[in-house]
Amino acid sequence: MAEFGSKDRSEEPKNLEPDWSYNVGEAVLDIDAVTLSSFEVGILILGEKNLFCLKDNCVTLKYAKRLEYKALCFQAYVIEPDGKLMVLVIADTNTLMIYEGTTLKWSAQLPLTPVSVTRAHFQHLDGVIVVLSEEGQLEACYLGSEPSLFIAPPLHRRGYDYVAAEDELMELRKSAKRNKASGVQLSDVNMDAELIMSVTVSTDLEPRLRGNQDDSKDDAEGRNSMCRITIELSTYTTLRDVQVCVDVSKPFVVEKDCHVITNLCKLVT
Image (cartoon, helix red, strand yellow):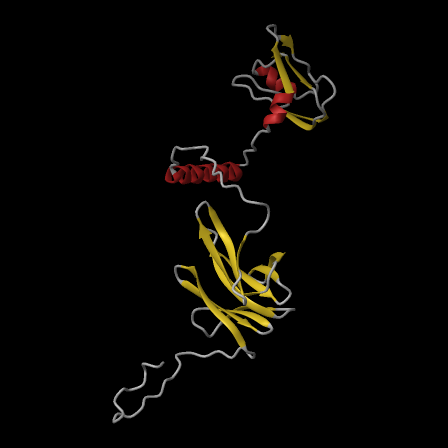
C-alpha cells in the first residue's frame, strides 16, 4: 500500500481500491489462509465473538462458529492426506481449543497466557503446538500422553500394486452383480461346515407305486419301476428352513425335486 502511491508529486494520486470486501460485523483479531485442496483455498478470520471461514472467492461464507469465550489468538492447518481443516483457538482462560470445522475435538489447559500460537514439526516429532506469552515465555506442547521417539519399522516392506488390486475389486463387484441378477445365492461357509449330507442310491429297481388311474400312460412308456434314493442330513446346530433339491439325468425322472425342512431334527428319505 505504501508503494502504491506515486513517487512523482506532479502526477495525480491514484485511488487504492480493494478487489473484494466482506462485512463480518465485528472487529477482526487475526486472519489466516490455508490450502484445502488443489483447487480450493480457505480464509479463516478470528473475530471477537465468532470464527469465520470464507471460500477463496471471498464472497461466500463456508461456515461460522460462535465463540462462548474471548479469543486471544488462533492458528489454522490442514491434516494430510485426509484434508481435514483444523483450527487452534486460545481462550482468555488459558485454554486451548481444537476445532474440526465447527466441532470441538480437543481442549487442554495451558500453563501460561499465549499471545501467539503455531503448529511446528521437529525431528521425530510432528504436530508440536508452540505458544508464546506476552512476557516472552516460549512453550512447546503436545496433546495426549508423552510421545515415544522410537519409530517402528513398517511390517510390509514390499510394495503394493494398487492398479491390480483395483482391477480385481472391479471384477469381484461385477461377479457379485451377476450372481445377484441371476438369483444365485452365495452359500454360508459356516453352514456348509456344520451340515453333513449322505446320499445312498439303491442298486435294485423296485415296482413303482401307482397312486392314481393316470399311470396307464406312463406304463405304456415303460415307466413302471423306480430307483430309491436315501438322503441323510445331520448337523450339530439348529438349522431351519433347509431346502433339499434333487436333480437327475434323463431318462430318469424325479417325483419330487424339492423338499423343505422347517426344522432339521429328523431323518428324511
